[in-house]
Figure 1: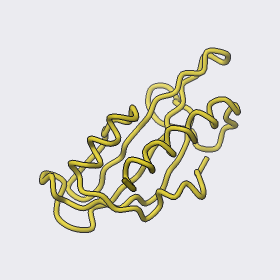
Figure 2 (figure 1 turned 60 degrees about the vertical axis):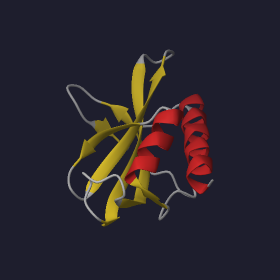
Figure 3 (figure 1 turned 60 degrees about the horizontal axis):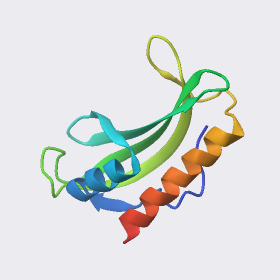
Figure 4 (figure 1 turned 90 degrees about the vertical axis):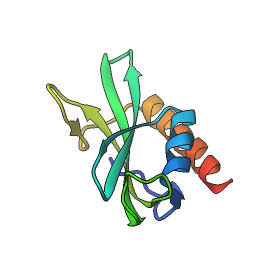
Length: 115
């Protein structure tokens, strides 16, 4: 599921501030390389015994990721169901409480990045 109209698409931040803000909301920077990084937020749905991840894709527009002043731009925001042994299914249906929590976390992050 692609999250549309989050207000995050195209938003820019330096790496140090994005890491700090994401951590405050509960996101973790997992995958990264010199020019890209993803931030994930894990949601556990106890009713279905499933795990979902909100994933924010970013790309460096100035610098490389090993430097805290590197500027990243948010490219897209996804919500996917975790699959075994690893991976995310972006096409499966997502329970409304999970979507609501994901939207709240994205709004909190947006507010921090716009401050």
